[in-house]
Length: 260
Image 1: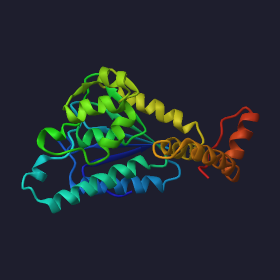
Image 2: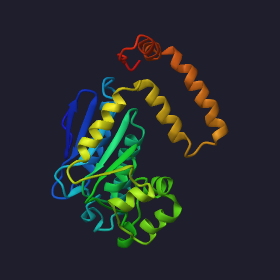
Image 3: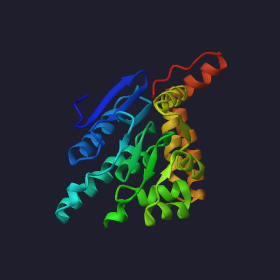
Image 4: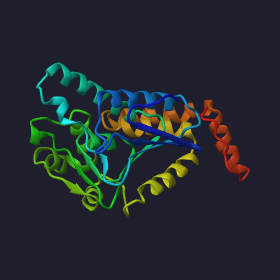
C-alpha cells in the first residue's frame, strides 16, 4: 500500500477501513479523489480483503463534498477536470469487487453524500444530515447523485432533495430508503464492522458475482439478467470457493475462503 492524500487506510482481518481526513469538513480535492480511485484499485488487488468501510474522521462531518473555492473563478476547464475526477473515483467505488459500507457520521453534503450513494450499504448515525444542495449554488450533482439517489429513494424524494434543496435527517433517510440502518452517535463504525464480519462469512467470489448481478438490474432488462444469473451460477463451479463452501457445509465446519 501507498500513502493516500487526505485518506487514512487501516486493515483488520478481511476488512479495510478508509477514514476521510481533510479537516475541518473532509472536502474532496483533485488529489484526494485521484488517491481514492487508486486506493480502490489497490484493494481490488488484495484477495484477502472482502469489505470496505468508509467514514469521516471525528463526529461532525462524513464529508461536505467539494470545496466551492474550486469553482469560484468560473474556469470551465477546471470544472471538467473535477467532474471527471469525482466520476472516476465514485464509479470505482461502486464497482469495487467487495462490499462497501458508508458510515455517515455527521454531515454528508453534495459530493460527500454521492460518495455514500456509491457504496453498497449506508449506515447513518442519529445526528447525521444529508443533502445534495448543488442547485442552490448554480451547480448540480456530477458524481452520480442524479442517478443513484432516485434508484434508492424514488423519483419524488430525489427531486425534493435535488430540485428543492431539501435536507434529510437520519430518521427520514431510513424511512425513504436512503440508508439501511440508523445507530446512536458514535456507534456507526461498530455496526459497519459487524456487517463486514458477516460479509467475511460468505464466499467472496459468490459475493462479487452477486453484486454485479444486483447492480445490473439498474440498466439491464430482467430477462437478460436472468440468463446472466444462471451463467454466473454455473461459472462458480470453476472456483475453489464453490467446492470449499459445499464441502465445509457437509462437514459442519467453517469454510476457508480463498477468493478463487
